[in-house]
Amino acid sequence: MSEQSMSGSNGRPSFVVLGGGPAGLGAAYKLAQRGWRDVTVLERGSRVGGNAGSFVIDGVPVDFGSHRLHPACPPPVMADIRTLLGEDLLDRPRHGRIRLRGRWVHFPLKPFDLFTRLPPAFMAGVVADAARKRLATGRNGGEESFASILEQGLGRTICRDFYFPYAQKIWGLPPTALDPEQAKRRVSNGSLGKMVRRVLGAIPGFRKPGAGRFFYPKQGFGQISDAFHRAAVASGATVILDARVTAVHVSNRRVSGVDAVIAGETRSFPATHVLSTIPLTVLTTLVRSEGQPPVTTAPLQQRSMVLVYLTLDTDRFTEFDAHYFPEAVIRITRLSEPKNYSQTTRPGRTVLCAELPCALGGTEWTMSDAELSALVCQDLERAGLGPVPTVLAVQAQRLPHAYPLYTKGYRQAFDALDTWVGGIEGLVTFGRQGLFAHDNTHHTLGMAYALVHCLREDGSLDRGCWTEARKGFETHVVED
Image (cartoon, rainbow, N blue to C red):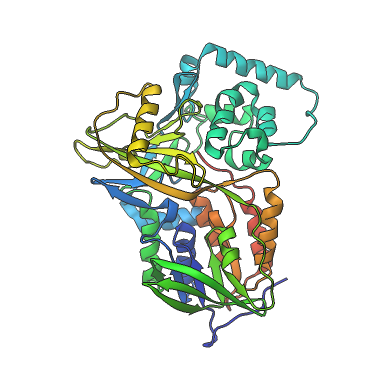
């Protein structure tokens, strides 16, 4: 069923976009490009980009974790990013490594590296798992979970030594407690066959275009959001920072406007459309509807993260862009060195970014900077990366909504909220937080482009078009 045409007092649609991350800014840019001038983005933070933003520490651009723009980026999105960034968009080789059973293995996986560096017992286990899989006649009974899906596809050895302990660290739950969707959305190599094809892709002659490479802006990953911000404003949109949304007003099951606190004062923004990229559970608490009972916030959970930045008294810590740590004895999950992404020239200084997933308000969340620095240095020494050069400064950033947590039954909870929001004309939720998805930045920008594409010339939403687009979003798998 198509949505009725909605127009403001001047007969034209008016849009308020909640959230100034890549999805929100991408939507604002495309809306303004289509000629709609009444487009306002409300961003709670003091800078755009959200978790995909960047900032500077001691002359080094750093991100909120390890971010890359993948070659799988939809062509229309990629074309715009190339135009907006020009020569500032670098084409970089993937050069990371994973620690398995005390040994380092290159990531992305390379054939020679696998055969020369993997422990023989690990390789023997993988081969035995593959043989058992070929002899298996059917699927095991019982309830499916993240653990069962991966073990069936990859075998016990890879799961036991990498995916299961890594999952426990990232999500804080045993793999058996996670929904199967967690495996489908987060693990691109969900079977031995896919993993073999990925490894073969590193060999000349088998390599797909873009394999083993990524794109990265010179000034940090947040430069993508900054560029969309400038382009949206230049095209006629308005972006307001430090805007705390307090209400989304609904009348007769149709959105009518948004209230936000800006510089200590409440301002109202009339709107025929509210396009939201903020967490779905937060959005539902903001809706003020006459004659429509408020929805009970369903138990959707988010995993939080503390990012620990260490400024070191050295030009470079290692040659690698990222290190992955599946072992339980090491508490951080990933370490990145931003200078190795952007090729920033800053003599005598480098910055490390350590990722520490945690529970909101838990022990790690409340640690002091000094405690976090000691934890990271201890982990690096345990991993054989010590002694760490002199730490000149430490800074922590806390992300309350780092990853959606797909506990068993999460889908019913999500569908309940999604259906309730979908019953309000003019209110659309999209993006990583809005659709409770693990997606990469190129996925979320693709969502924004698809949403604007599904708007008719009069501003009404083609529900059939949007439904089909969302079916496509369900197939997204995180690139890493």
